[in-house]
Length: 109
Image (cartoon, rainbow, N blue to C red; front, side):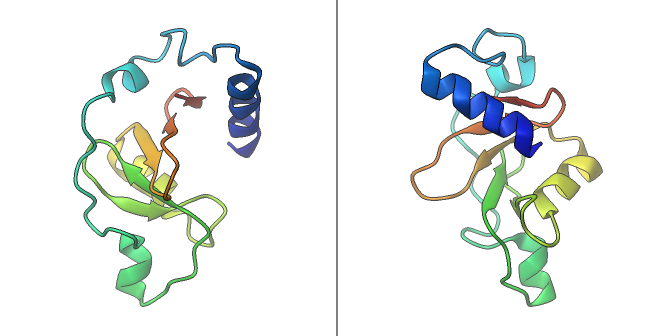
């Protein structure tokens, strides 16, 4: 996933449309409305339940508002949430970041 994120970021910086901007990912296209309220603002839901605060970055599920830690974190709770629920699109839950990611198609939008 990291490699795909890097390629998508490079395309965005270069000004060329990525697959998601070309309209090939219906999930990203559908995830354009207002974001759901985060269930645990500023905290990974599962890490907080474990009493841990050791994560790299946070991601919010655009289907239900679940906040989970990224794949660079020890527990990878955002990806685990997708695997458990099938909710396809998440967004960075970091200040100043608004990029989205479709797990199903490995596309950034």
